[in-house]
Length: 355
Image (cartoon, rainbow, N blue to C red):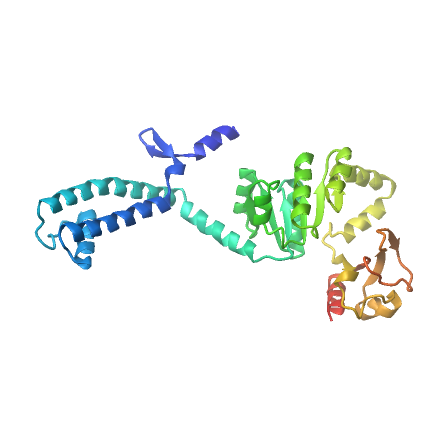
């Protein structure tokens, strides 16, 4: 079915059972032929009839437009032959221009190009954004989370149906229709300026390609990848992924925990906004802080007193975590604090550390 749809899209039905490849409908070529006709007509009348530039342009326009006005000056034999050739050539050029114009209006190509140009201009201005590769069920969940938290992101997908769903969406989603495993597509998405990339494709091999390409282009970018096969986990980490998520494994663990610890799971769901709670998390990294906050202890920072939020976790420089770190825990290089609070408290945290 997909192959038939693709063939159908490549042809323009002209009626009476005839169709032409849509690739022949080139607006730039049509306009170029029209300008070339105007130029050749003007030069021809100037050379053959010794017309001035103004007279030659006027004569060319009234000839190709077939309005039937009288010649600027009487034409000799050479001028008449040239005018005949110009009229005959104009029939083909005008027919092609009309066909192209009709195609672009009927098929909506003009508006599509304007829409894509607008999106590409907005993408070119983004910095520290997120690139989301794949708009399947997991990609849509991630996009909804980004929308809720007002995060800038770009969707990349090569499935025409999914791209059409994005175009029909009421949300102004930035997207690129293309293969996320290629350098060109990722560079078009501004991967060199992006803060993170999520590879949520269903094919593990494609996710590996994306991780390899993204890490090569931007060594500092944060990479999160989906995986289906447990054996792919290590490959993705070796390829450069910071985190690998296995949805099936997480789903099984979640269901099992609902049996053994249902209240704990419900509370965690509450914290992660499954029930539209006002509670969230914030990660404060050492390297993003001004020197006045670096190397200080939790007690010296006084985050709870100043904002009402709580530091519930500490990621040590070696990558290990401490839950509910003691007040004497110091903010060291390559470490970060995990802070819990409501939206107002977390906003106060960001303001606190931005001073």
